[in-house]
Image 1 (spheres, rainbow, N blue to C red):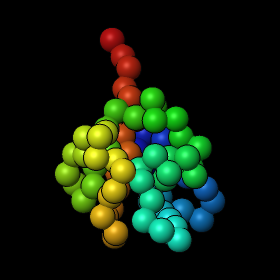
Image 2: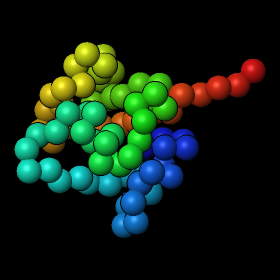
Image 3: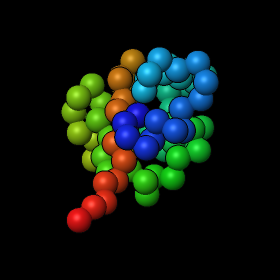
Length: 75
């Protein structure tokens, strides 16, 4: 999690990182749901440093390190 998204991480995290466990391989949307993050708050998602198109959020690979980047507004 980067930027303001760090606020969504629960206690016990290591900085802006944490390991999540699921019974089955989750989609990115299921991860966001568990962390109570609205997908509209995201600018993009990376899996092991590679950009993931939102259409491919359904099946990240087991063990992928996911990075969530917030929308940035400014002027």
